[in-house]
Length: 40
Image (tube, rainbow, N blue to C red; front, side, top):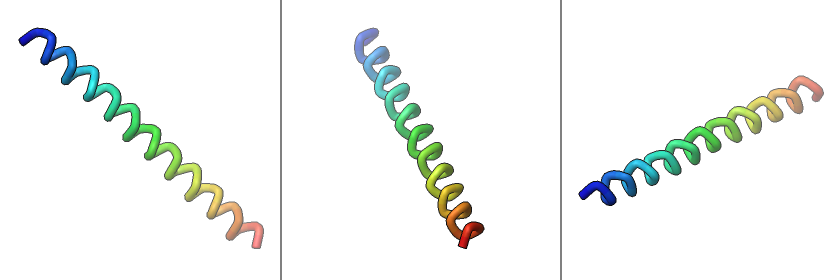
């Protein structure tokens, strides 16, 4: 039972990091698009 809980926690940590990474990448791509539009 303890092992399953730690596995779930590890999985949550990985999913959390991936979500954060995708949000950061999305923010950067939107920011870069804005810069291109401003430059144009």
